[in-house]
Image (cartoon, rainbow, N blue to C red; front, top):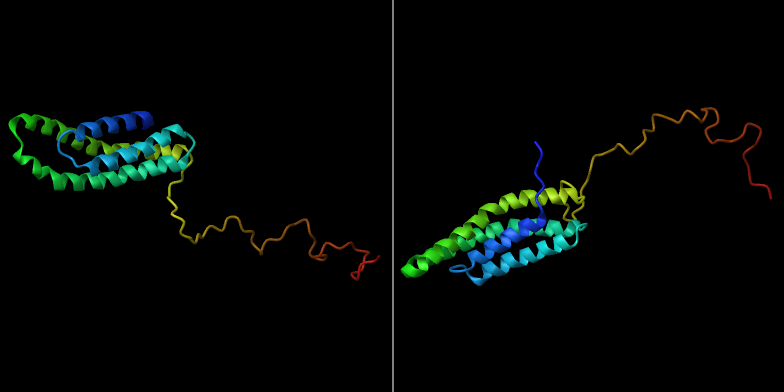
Length: 168
């Protein structure tokens, strides 16, 4: 099954719009700052099409905002119970758009990860810690010798020459 190609501009625009609508009535400024700063990194990833770092930072930023959005919703949602009837519709719309944005973030993470791989990112993320690998394909076995050298003459000396000091 082929994964559909989703444009990075569409992902950033969708989350920008949902963040604006989510901030209309009830979420604190920390929600807006967190989401808009991640969207700024997304604009950087759009501007530099070959940058692996930009798309990786955007991916990590979206993943972190999933957690921070859940925390914001858990803390600030009960505060909206005492709203007037007129403000209740605005609250419902704002809460619905913020929750929709949260639900779409894992899908966006999947598509941004695909873009990360397309730009040349590898499957495992290296944070700079040294690692030991057991890949020994690049080594040549000492049991197998090259057939071009003869076993009688292991130092590639001509038959008539004697080993000794160099002549000047």
